[in-house]
Image (cartoon, rainbow, N blue to C red):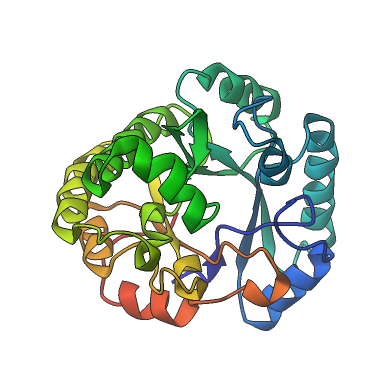
Length: 278
């Protein structure tokens, strides 16, 4: 199994750490990783969410994207022969504004090697809302808007299905980010119907199988007190393996010490699975 961390962040993340990239990569090398994807949040459409302070923390401003790409390109050059650094972005599924993403991909497609394609946003009270901001915000601006967890969960997985369809059109290696992010605040919310989540994930499996879209096996939920588990269930990984869906470990590191977090769980969960990582 290729030891690959396929979902990581940088000092260009305004809700992460300003640590130098070398600290992340040196830790990855120390832990024996062979490949390391840098996948920062790129710019978002202006005014996407109604909370300006939150918006400013979600992603880099447009003028920083060329500097970010140059930064990652330099890391790739500097660490050549020590670890395979791949140039990536964590793009967002933005229904109604997919042309924004298309323009970005077109501009950078000759350098982009990896895209983590994520659902972070849903329609909510007063506009588009972030599903992984804070439990109180989730309850006030999403749960109250939809009226029940079942309706909200179904809306989320409807967006995940739309994200898979769009991601399948992208010309580079692409995987769906943290497929169960909707569970981030599960201990602070009304109980989520696990049977509903399983039904929706079972419906998603054939969509993945007939596309080139893989899965970001994201362990960040294990370090979130209100979640306490990975964002991908083991049974789902087993089905991905059976169907040949690519599964790539992702620490979703926002600090150097996050690199490699949960790798042992991933290695154990993938043991005996037939799916590949590429």
